[in-house]
Figure 1 (tube, rainbow, N blue to C red):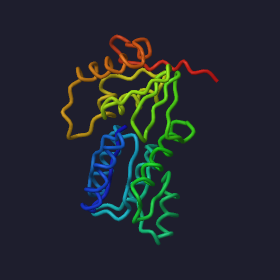
Figure 2: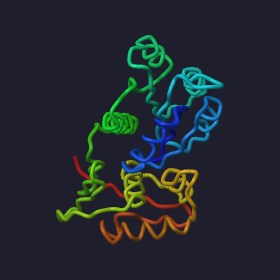
Figure 3: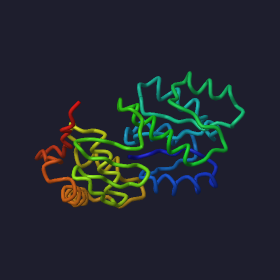
Figure 4: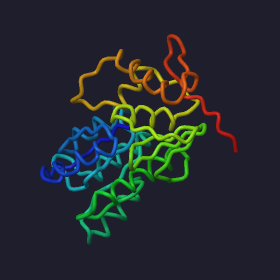
Length: 224
């Protein structure tokens, strides 16, 4: 999953970015409202962490513009702990959740997981279950249908999570690349094929179907 972190506090960004990446997010960072609004309109991110006190354009104004133009990506706003009025205005502008500063990274991760799954109409959980597979966001380990556990690399985890969250949908290579890699990563569409093949070795070659000329589809065989 690809995350846009909008924050002008360099120390906070320095602490958050590695923690978010370790948790399985591809992270892009911007430090002002103008760039944030532009990137939000690119529709390449799955979730935004948005500070309200930004230079050039406030986070609240950015959020209002996104919502007025129909952009529905999940947004968690960051506010000063005692700024209740900012929280109220943020919700009125269309925020999905808020977090008061200072905060623990673990709380941010839990809120991110919750808003992402709500946006995809799933019950919030640290474990993603599809077709007998269990993907744990905390450990980034996969439990296969036969009960075996498999450690995944960062890319494997992000790729499988995105496929499972969008089960039944055809996802092109370009879409997968946009949501698995950040701007600083070297991108090669052929690498997606390599990681797809690695995942197939773990979950079965028929679980991820190739649609020639279109992309890939994770087949959801869950019942109930």
